[in-house]
Amino acid sequence: MYRPALSVVIPCYNEAACLELLHARVAAAARAAVGDDHEIVLINDGSRDDSWAVMQRLAAQDPRLVAINLSRNHGHQLALTAGLDLCSGAQILIIDADLQDPPELLTDMRATMAAQGADVVYAVRRKREGETIFKKATAAAFYRVLDRVTDTPIPLDTGDFRLMSRRALDALLSLPEQARFIRGMVAWVGFRQVPFPYDRAERHAGETNYPLGKMVRLAFDAVTGFSTAPLRFASHASVILAGASLLLLFYILWGFFEGSPVQGWTSTMLVVTVLSAVQMFVLGMIGEYLGRLYIESKRRPLYLVADIAGPVKGHSTLGF
Ligand code: UDP
Ligand code: MG
Image (tube, rainbow, N blue to C red):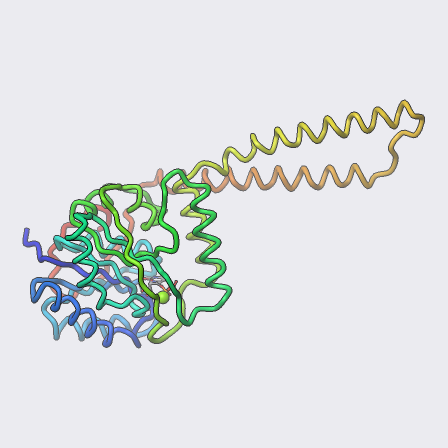
């Protein structure tokens, strides 16, 4: 199988307004880094705008561009998986389509990789431009909570923007799970991984495709994929609640012997509602894991391809 020196993998959802400039900048950066021996893999994740038409046009102009049209919107992590699965480069750059991550950093990232003998160079956000305080705050909180609950150390403030070696990518592609949190899975894979600090730019055009709902889902995938701590919450809670009920028992007995037994339904209602909330929460957590187990057990392909424009050189192991 032919292996270009570099593959640039870019998942795209409603990014028509970014694609031309994206292609120009990525192609220039790739050429500056490795010359013509590269491929650019664009994945159209069921966009509702004319991203696919633009991709086909670009693919007709640039023989190094491969455009993959997924059968529907599979979500960012699966679209990225499709691109990683079908690319064939010896080094792989993952980058967002909206130009928030400057492709020009490629040369420096390759230099870091070579100098440090690394398999993964992951870009760490020093600054984030043009994002709301809410997004920045939730993102910051998310990475810190994740760091506390997971057993795999997942680097803070790190998105999917990274450069990987082929052996690290092959290791990543050997993980078959449906619920994919790729930046965590890459961390899990190991090898030598080094950070690369950068300033995150504003979106070039369009708007974020990660509204609150999708962020929460990603967060759930991250936590359930890398930790079973929420399942242990029930046992921790039971110890605390057992202690609390013991204190309550003493209090009630004391009132009883003093001749003024505790009265009223306020306390009863409080205990019932608090305990139901805790129980529902624990049930919900079990449900999350059970649901994921069920989905995994179906072993469906991770993504489905509808059309391909340009020369695909990789062999799929995860999709169809
Ligand atoms: N994306 C995708 N499928 C989706 C949502 C997003 O392929 O369902 C792509 C999107 O085109 C972009 C990347 O994932 O290249 C990151 O999305 P976005 O920029 O909207 O997220 P943010 O940077 O706001 O976190
Ligand atoms: Mg973005």
